[in-house]
Amino acid sequence: MLEASMIKFKRYPYRVGETYGMNGGLTKRQITMAINKPVRQAKKLQAKAPLLAELITAEPIQDFDAKAEYERRQANHDDYTRYHRSCEAKRWHEARKRFFELDNDTQAKIIKEWEQLTIKASISMPATAVRFAGLVDRISGDRDRRLAKYEAEHNERMRQIRERQGRQIDMFGDLA
Image (tube, rainbow, N blue to C red; front, side, top):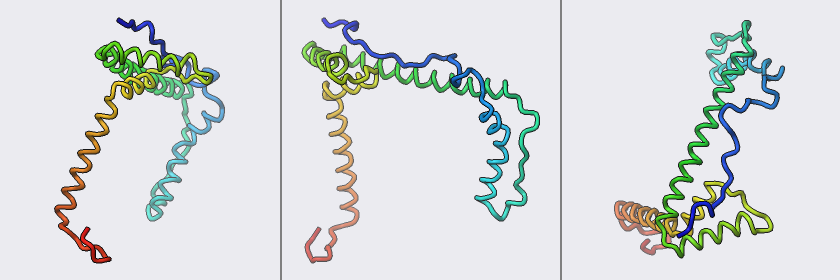
């Protein structure tokens, strides 16, 4: 039986709580852009609705709190990172589950190709969970079965559309 330790992959690179931005704070440009954001948005609305342009006005933010803005951006960054890490983990768990449902020969094929792609290749591919899931999907034949099912559904829809339209004569006189 193959072990999970044979499959090494690169973890999602970011951690929740890593500082937003390079310097751990907002730059002068970011602060200026945040202060003038209402004015920029008003200009866009004025361009979209020229008849209401005189009603749409905005002033730069007078009492701008850079710390609050940084905390808001940090929270958004953490949420984004958390979401993408959970997506990667979900894909990894699904692929791992499917991998261990396969027979030993197919597992060996997957491990061999995984090692060739990630370790032994002259230009190795990133060993990510998504790439592993794609490899399992392709070698197990799930992808081909899924695509065949979608193609059959599409062909059935197209057949129904042609039936509804009836047999039409094309411009050269042949029946289509």
